[in-house]
Length: 410
Image: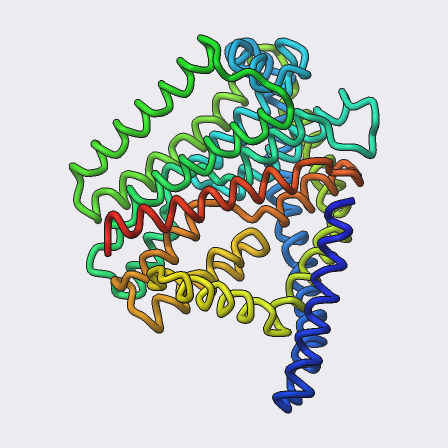
């Protein structure tokens, strides 16, 4: 229901802004631009779904081998103490906990192509536990907020973009991004727990969160000992080695259980193809709405308005030039990436705005894209508090990114 109102708002606001530009500014190109964006966005949505088909087939095939080989169940038992606290409505030891872990691990390593199919598999398993098939459950919402908060330990793609744009030290945003995305994730967990009346003040969760802090601290220290070339090489190698190790481990586990791994893979791959086709309408809907909103100039109006308000309050407006990236990120990953590159092009890769736009890009994920794809894959219509929790986590990430950027670079 919330997505329904947001989708309508995209078009209504875009239309009003476009009318204002046409009547008062004589902008004759705004409506053609909006119509062009509908066709381009529709094409993009289909291309994304088409591109996901092969990846979904691959990873859901691998996950099917893992299920039949017992790996997913083993992960479920291992993670039960934590997941019972964070996802109390999921039965202890249920296979979905293994899928959730695999998705989160892929996201943390920046392996988006692997994370999406693993996440869709987790949604299908949670839907099996759902008594109201058209309504999001508490575990689904907590899972999606963990995805939208965008916890990423290795933002390799952002560092590559900075290197291409001529940054003196492409890796200088690594620690700021790590800190910003960590705060975004913690905020998402806390906010969703408040909505769902989950008690986080227990020994298991305190030890888990403390362990996460320790791991983040150790990674920051270790990465600080490497030069930029070594860091890029190590992060890329670690991510790919871990990914290939997962594939081999699943296949070996299937062989150990005397599973016909080829047939199991084909069975899972068929599910991947079906899922990719099913999400096309949802992607078309959300991306067309976003495209129209952006083409109308509404995004620029919001950014300029924020700058004017901050200036009137006597605040520092240095961050305003990077806001388009922050505002676009919940709507479109590729759009935000374009905004980030545009900021580095116009202001310089090593400028405050250039660096802050990179931190924005890495601090959260594409909330509306994730909600549309994941909920669409299981035909969820009523999202309950998912949008509110996801956007509040995004807001925490944006505020953290601004504060951290001022601390490191201003």
